[in-house]
Image (cartoon, rainbow, N blue to C red; front, side, top):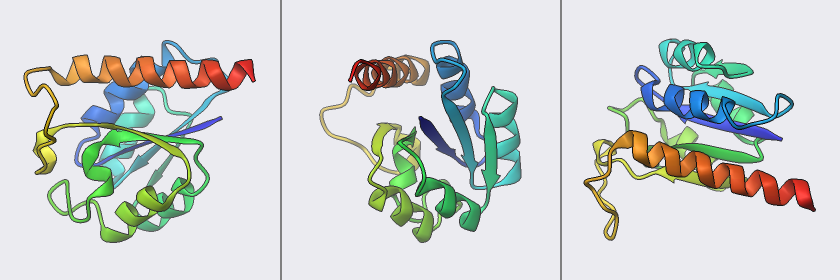
Length: 142
């Protein structure tokens, strides 16, 4: 199982997701830190990612190999994260057949109707981690 955590800027959200996932996942589950820049990737690696890749080409090549992808909603929006998320990366994430579990954060410039905007990012990350755990449990039982 390969889980891709995509983030940009300082990799803060991706790092939080990885720390939480490492707490529940078996050691053989690979977590890939896919950062728009080296700082984001390095921070996600420090959080416990198995492997890391930085920049557009490395991200696109690795995204195609993931079984599950997570990160802020901006990872499917061209030019989000202050322009760090390129159209090619957004397209790679959107076109990848892997299941995607995205964090609905407004700082990506998108508001999602029906989402409780009062919930904190740590609470939303709890929900992402719980959902990934449920998905992996189902795959293991098959």
